Length: 198
Image 1: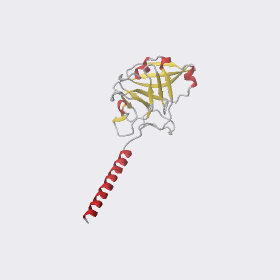
Image 2: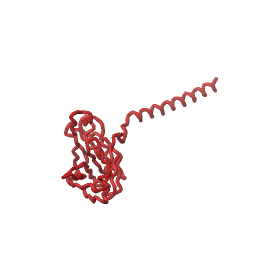
Image 3: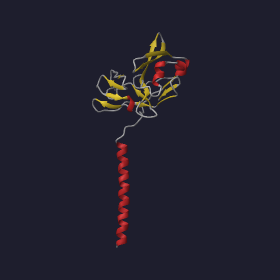
Image 4: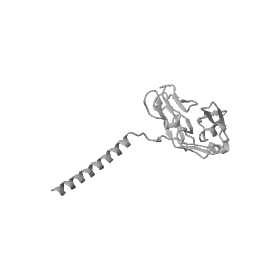
C-alpha cells in the first residue's frame, strides 16, 4: 500500500509539472505581439552609389539618428527624400537600377529607419511612417497619419497624440494604450552600403 501511494504521488507530481509548463507556454504566446508585420514593403537603396549623408547618418550604429524615407517626383524624375530627426534633409535622384526596382514603402509610401540605442550591439529598425492606431487603408477618403519624429527618438501622431519609442521596438510610451509601430525587417551593410527593408 505504501509503495502504491509513492507511485501515485510521483505520477501526480509529474502531471502537475507538465501542466504548469503547458500553462506557461500558452501565457507566453498569448501576451506577445508579432515582432514583424505581414504587410508588404520592399525598398533597396545602395548608398555606395547615392552617397547620401542624411541616409548614412541613420545607418551608422550609435548615432541616435532616425530618417524618414519618402518618394518625390520633380519634372518627371523620381527621387528618394530623406528627413532626419536631427533636422537635416536631402533628396537623391533614382538611378537606372532604382528605376528597374519596384519600390513599396509601407502603408502610405513612408518608412522610418535607424539604429536603436537601448541594446548593445544596437538593433537596426525599419518602421512604417503611419500611426498604426489611426491609419486605415480601407477608409474612404484615405487619410494619412504620418508620424513626426523628434530628436529624442520618439515618434508622435498628431491625430491621437500617442508617442512611440523608436529605440525600443516602437512601443507606445505616452497617450492611450494601443498597438506598437508596424515594424518591417530592415538591414544595412553600413553607412555607405546597402539599405534593405522588407
